[in-house]
Length: 102
Image (cartoon, rainbow, N blue to C red; front, side, top):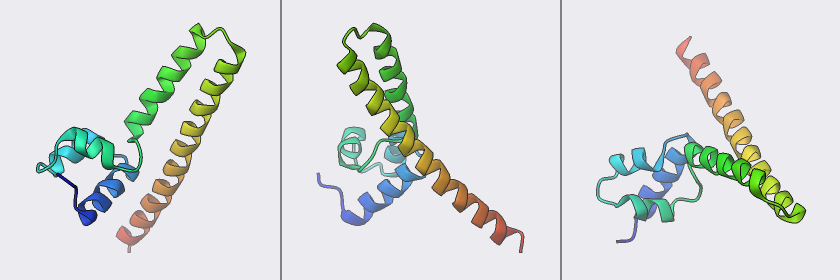
């Protein structure tokens, strides 16, 4: 079943705001976990964290320098994504706090 555009946009917003695919699938019970997983634009924070952890663990056993560099580059890109998301979400929280204090 194809996910409706407005629902997919909402799912992508949830991912950007830190929800896991499992949490999103609870909010949208009409869709299977894997349907959501394959359709959202990005991995959740938890998914990125797990991928980074896996890449670091791979670095230990990888012998080839070129493979280690590829793995390190992928982990670096994921860390940059997490940083930018944190920065954006921090600005949102500051704005929310400012509005609530009025």
